[in-house]
Image 1 (spheres, rainbow, N blue to C red):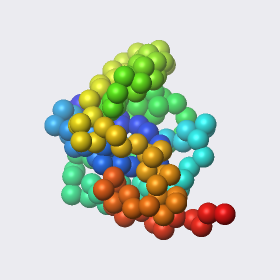
Image 2: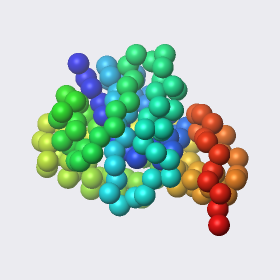
Image 3: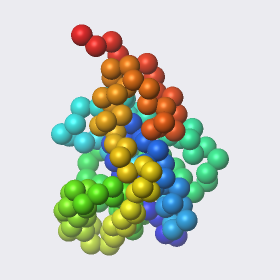
Image 4: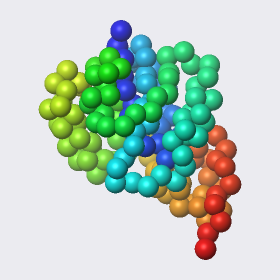
Length: 156
């Protein structure tokens, strides 16, 4: 069975992420959306809440599951039996960043192969960071995410 792990903080999960997962299901028998805890980031939305929202999006897709994890992605891939990491690339900056991470993951888990999918052009400008900022200040993000986000916390 060809299992791919699609790791990220998904804070929030975007239509760009959705596109990568859907395209990944054509390449792999199973895609695990793995919501990690990035120690350098403070979350905008709780991990459990985001996991539940993503599960709803894929409730009719048996090839897709959602799991949360802490620790190294390469170790979690080993635990789940995933031999592939699925990653989306929007631009050359993403490639430079993802290439470095792919090399480190391969060092930790030599059986792990990273597969890059180029983001669909219509979705290339979408980033979780931009969506968070728009949402935080009351802007409409419905065109960028596959579900309704909860009302933003009041800003000072």
